[in-house]
Length: 259
Image (cartoon, rainbow, N blue to C red; front, side, top):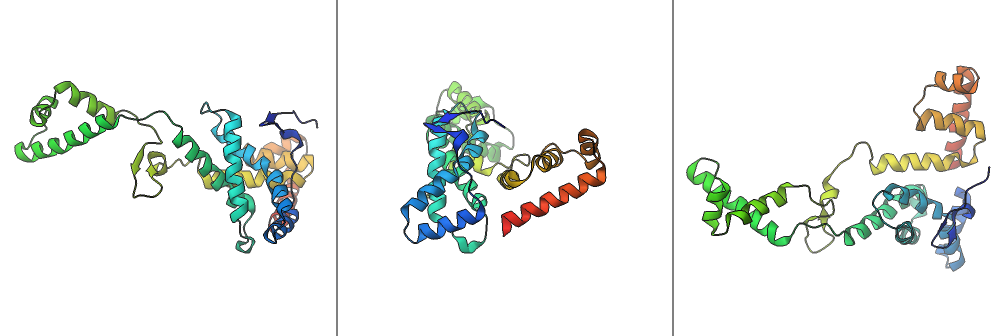
């Protein structure tokens, strides 16, 4: 099958190498013994991992070249810090680090911010609101809050609207002198969790060594969510054959991924 040529940062992605687990292990051992060329091979051999990750961020309006370069920084950090003794696949370790590097880049370059002055007024208004509720046992109006604070009524309205409207996911909500915590760090998305996404990516990587029919069956079963019977009808074999091929393919992948 002919691969389409896509060039990112001068790299022809159709020609990127794919390393086996055994090749990865040997290169890590060489690198840790001081072989600089082994590190370069590890970087080049895992650029497809970076490409897979940046696809997740391709709807943010960022230049692909920029995301690719930032992702490569995360990849190199992963390579430099990976510990073979932990007995985990490199992609499982590297993908969260690459994602983290890209997220930091997006945070640092994100232009959307709620004005600090508006936030300050809004937070003070909330304190005054609480004070007035305790004093009068009723919800104060914006005008009453404005009079208590000695600021124009319009300032209170704008400030309260600012903190009630949707804010940037990269808005910092806590900072103790180290890395800040952002709004997006506190949000959970069951449909797109990093752990689930990494598992799917690992499954795709493990399918490289399968034949075309095995790849097709696993793709239909686990990425398209079809039943064995549906797959059997589509490719013209029995459900029992689909079951056998599926089990054999998974067994082969497990052997490759965890040997």
